[in-house]
Image (cartoon, rainbow, N blue to C red; front, side):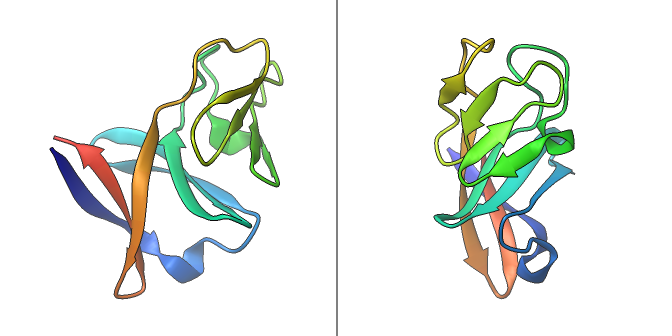
Length: 104
């Protein structure tokens, strides 16, 4: 089961930007790409770096530690050294807020 949690006002996440925050005890990365608003686990699956300290280029999230990259829409690995995808979460807009769906 998934529960949606209010994260931030939509205006706090401009186009082409990302933001790390804690939601319901999870370290979550919000990204706003040309394809919409997306959410992933913020901790890189390869190292112990927070992706929010890296860069967003189009739909590519680039880890600041070793340069691994992930698709912000799905969490899929786009470039090594990461081998495992990031967990992706559903997002939605409600009353001007970004909400993230997390498993119960």
